[in-house]
Amino acid sequence: MRTAAALVAAGSLLLTTPSATARTPVSAPASEAHGTAVAAARAASEGIDFGPCDEEQDLPPAVECGTLRVPLDYARPDGEQILLTVSRSRATGEDPATGRAVPRQGSLVNNPGGPGVSGMYFPMLGVVPGWKRLAAAYDLVGYAPRGVGRSAPLSCADPKTFHQGPAPAPRHPSARVKRERAARAAAYARGCAERAGDALRHYTSPDNARDLDVLRAALGETRLTFLGSSYGTYIGALYATLFPSHVRRMVFDSAVNPAPERIWYRNNLAQSAAFEDRWADFRAWVARHHDVYGLGDTAREVLDSYDVVRERLAGKPAGGKVGPAQLHTAMLKAAYYDDHWPQRAHALSAYLKGDPGPLVEQAEEHPEAAAEAENTRAVYLAVECNDAPWPTDFAVWDRDNTRLARRAPFETWDNVWTNLPCAYWPAPRRKPLDVRAGKGDLPPTLILAAERDAATPYDGALELHRRLAGAALVTERDAGSHGLAGGANACVNAHLTAYLLEGRVPGRRASCAPHPAPEPTT
Image (tube, rainbow, N blue to C red):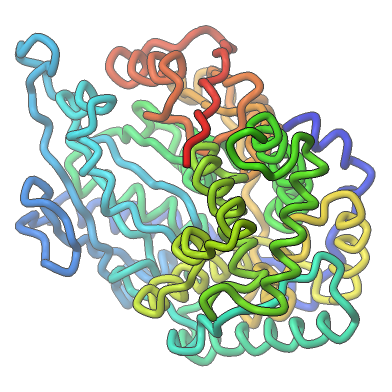
């Protein structure tokens, strides 16, 4: 997935329910539970043969790599198998501050989000100061989920056609643009079916949760210690619902709203609304530093400067590479992470002063990264389109998002174009699992959330907190960076470390002051 206040303000815009689809949602059969048990028992016996990573993995020598065998279809555990790539750095066993021996607590498994993102780099965090205490007690384990990277890779189009150079990004697209984008979305959905065949239906969030249980068994763990960020929190929530007795400790960092009626169409509407407010946060910060960037001393004036950049790029792409669409993608990162704010503001300022170099550097698309980008999009769509019903009539999308774009133009239509292949998806839709855990079902779990996070709006953390008895919620107030674990807030990190190392949670709820805003730089 990409503040409570933002969602309340937009509430009247988010009440539309997806229309009935032409394809009936399907529920997971009980045979998949049996299939998971079979696969996990087999993995516990086989383990993972870790060794040096291939050069293509681009990982340091301290990280080991291996593969995990899982069923493509858990209803047929002895049928077709796929291999998932796994990475690991072993626990150092030594406290970084005192040098004293630290008992090993097992494996800490990470999913960084997506869908479609690899976690193979997670073990590299063990050398970062804020992670060294955790790396002393835990093997840090990352993996590429099914479909991602070299884990039964999924593709829906020729990567050579994925990046097509400078492109427009109208905030209020015309009827012609909408028809063209709908046709492109339908073609992409067809490409997914043609390239993946019947396997396409098996890229789902419940399958990702089942893979996680097989990975737990292969690592020799009777119970799972897991850190999920963004979409990874939804995998964790499904895991906690499907395998509650297998949970040791679980961190939900920047939580997706798991309510079944929100998966995934309405969550994306809510996200677009929240991004508008986060985009305003960035512009207000730039305005406070008008003396550095010269883009305006009010958020409105900064928006005017941004619009000048957009209009000029529409007429003449920067460096022949960066048009309005590429500009928007670069600026969207500023809505995710405030540590991007100084770079993005400098790029806008430099461009208006006649130097397009910083903007081209930050916003251009790289052909050598096209295959990875297309793979990421293919897996993202396969998982989200398979997981739940979506409207199959473009008129529903048009109505809801035209209405929403009147107050949230920054991300609304770009979000539509990202997700629109789900309107034409050829595989069966599933009925989302009702995430629940009653009192005593789970050990204490920890939820981390920022109040103004736009990628996973804060109401998602509140909903997950209501659904998981015994969960503790740590809120970073008046902040909006996405992904808090190991980040800039020492208070949040103290709660994270206390939980993972000692199992301590701060009651039902705790809050932290916001981390400092970035300093302006050129």
